[in-house]
Image (cartoon, rainbow, N blue to C red):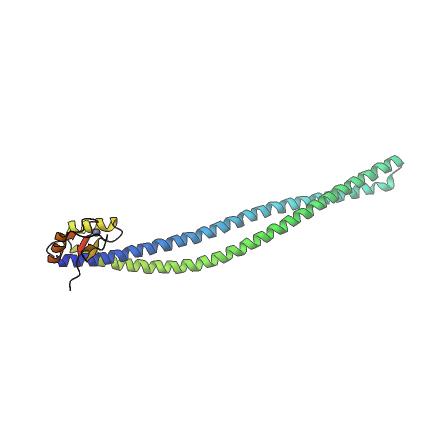
Length: 235
Ligand SMILES: [Zn+2]
């Protein structure tokens, strides 16, 4: 019975290490996912700002086009001045010039406003692009590190797994199954020591009779409270 118990204790030690190795893998993987998500979030902002900037630049080009048309119009009307015959016609043409100039001044103001918007948006975009470059660099460096750590971790897992397999082979199947069930249900602790008459898995006192049987060590004992497999440290 001692021999089986020793095997179980060894097995549990390895299973606990394996559980830790899996936890490390999960942590690393979620870190990588977090880095990718951060990068994608900033990239989406950059794309959105670029699209907005594109739109504003098109609107500004449209305004410049309007300004050119208005300038043409003013010149065309002014060219008519020398040929004017009547006072009435003169007043009408002056009024036309005045209106064309007012329209041009308005368009110029709109253009200036648009340019200001473009400059502000461009500054935002520059800032986000700098942020993106920094986060990409950081993410790539960390990704390389974490990939290396994962490889190391996987190597460890493989070695432990093969030790585990050879240990498990030496245990009777029903006992191995029982152990695995308890390990899964009881937070990775299936085999536990007894001290001062109590199970150290759940800290409950064992019945005196069971305690005596444990002392004799003839058969495997389970804690009546938590079902964990029990052993005693022998002097
Ligand atoms: Zn217990």
